[in-house]
Image: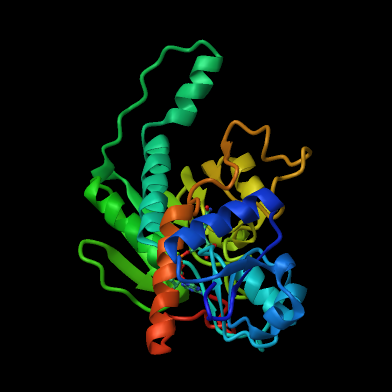
Length: 316
Ligand code: NAP
């Protein structure tokens, strides 16, 4: 067995998923001894320097008193940030080109779904209506990306390649070839006014919670659509429903919700102008994420340097 302290695997998943993750991670870093939190001895808990986590119980993390850093297996870390708090050890989130590719693919797929009027053709079929709708070329449409991080940047590139006009909003102004970029409050207004489809890919933070409320939605083009692949609470659900009811917005593709799964009574389930997806737009690939985590751990063991860590104050 390795002389290195064990790495703790901490999750709220079931035993089978925990065993499967530990097997995949161990294969990617055979020199390391990765142990489920529940199997760590008291001595191990004091020696552990690294925790690999997937929705961990914060009380378990607190028991690892020698912890130097935490690696999340997810890209979105708002829950961890809230639960671990400002005094937590440095937190590294998953940044995986394969995840970016998969998310960009989803953004393009659901953009095509809207551009090619699939919701309208579905409604026509249900009513046995045979009618051609006017074709809109991608170059006649603008897609606005809220968030130009790892996932947003991969997505705008894919949309641009497909011929859409693309505009993107981020906190710091970006420069991405062929893409209109904006920042700040007025930049968001510009994006909302110009876009036929708005795609949400910002992290959930104190600043982005409720970002798209009735005032912001009112800035959107009449008949525009929205795709939320980020987190439910970024859009105020009642305000979105109001805009869908009034016809101001024509369709919403929602992969994320305030509560997941949404309760059976949620009005989103039954609406023709809402597509409900079960949080599938950007699944973590175990094999690829294990390789990324292994490389980060290897680098840290060799150099003591961590990859970019989450800014706990900013929340992402
Ligand atoms: P990221 O690399 O941290 O990028 C976040 C982007 O949002 C950055 O461009 C950032 O601006 C911008 N941003 C953050 N707060 C802002 C604010 N207040 N005003 C303006 N822009 C702001 O994150 P990512 O890896 O692309 O992931 C984005 C989110 O996708 C995750 O947080 C997660 O919630 C979600 N996600 C969903 C799924 C799914 O299956 N549905 C899967 C994975 C991830 P700067 O560039 O200036 O910092």
